[in-house]
Length: 343
Length: 242
Image 1 (cartoon, each protein chain N blue to C red):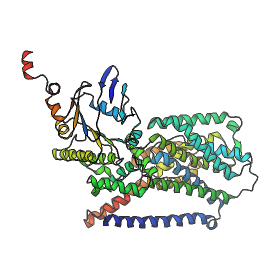
Image 2 (image 1 turned 180 degrees about the vertical axis):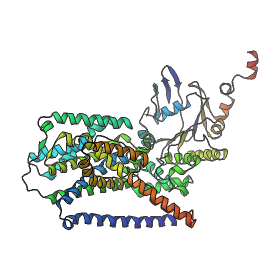
Image 3 (image 1 turned 60 degrees about the vertical axis):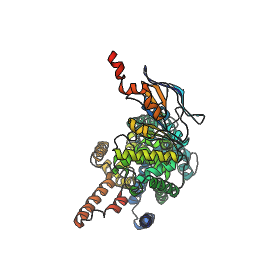
Image 4 (image 1 turned 90 degrees about the vertical axis):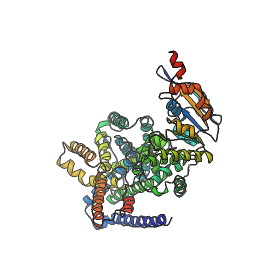
């Protein structure tokens, strides 16, 4: 009992420190426009926030619940087009973002109801099929301009900072929900589904309902990102927002950073936000090939992504130190703290 | 259970088996290999749909209910091959069951306290914060039962929980089953090991070739000539005539 109280207070301390660190980070990002005046840096940060949000959103379903989807472009695109249509109809952009998230969540149910009857690779393949079908439909839909795209007309002046803060708030919401999920019953249930769906059902978890809920939440966030991006870009077209490479981008970030963790997808989003444009600019023809190779490399070498590599490194260094002091019991507390916090 | 039949293709794995399990008992199934024990078990556990027949729990038809609905109806199961969530701690494994079991404890601290109580009852509290993957097979089997009990069931279905255990571990496991029964949970128990099952069960159903061969108290079963024949072949006297 005394021991458990002690670990509790240590845990409390760790949590408090984490909270303080997060607040400082958030404050720093909020102050950024005053520190750096370059519109290009602000633009990059804006895009990074959007990528972080989709990465974290995908991870709720693909990481925590372990349902690998190649179809998130559907929600991104639906969000983008919904905002575009709503804004051109004269609605307030923020209201349009909300409508986007609701529409995307509704779409996730339509996608999820049949596909969640499939498991593992079959689910992944089905999401590719649906995503491509939606892209083809959107390419041929006349009232959204079909393949030639759709322009958003905004009568208010363009304020980069407004976009910046919208994206920052959105990313914060995504990360906060991810943290919340990882600490609650919902996250524990998703985690169990990832590890052994049948065993989870045997303990009272309804896997089908839980997957649908995780999917809807992820889609709502992704749809909102699509909307925010559409407003910023002011022009969208199906090959872009509904394109297969959009799905691949969204999936690649959490995999790079570390799947099924809270901070891995954030890290992946940041890394991707920084290098993405360079890769596309330097290798316009083969950038998808590079992503594919990267994906295979990560899965083979370090399935835990960047975060997994860090953890392994930390453990190795720690184990060496432990050997030197020859205190075999000393690492136990660290083992608990550094155990991958999943779900 | 009424007239349960399960066909796999043209083969009847279980044919017209009917029986009743009384509350507060340990009820066992035995039978030679391929007798249909596991099929019957998985029908009751909702993992397999019977070709015909119904399963009732206190008068309510629960045939082929989804496993998570069975849990909410107060029926929990363990698996023959243990299936702990390896990436979780022992405590998290049990906490999950408290959260999603019949009582549906939503509060995090409450679920953790309930899980810790269960772990203490199963002598697993000292490994509560260890990852489930590092436990020995014996402890993993114990965890499997602890987890099922954390869903607060009326009926616990145990599938070969003593397989692969040493004699000492088996004896401890059987004591555990008795304790579970004495604390008010009915137990249904499938096992290969006749010795284990006759030691612990209040009533036993013997299956052979998918049919009910005999049913009764352990003493009764052991003296039933049909059962002896199924396990040991024809009695020596008869064999001489062949």
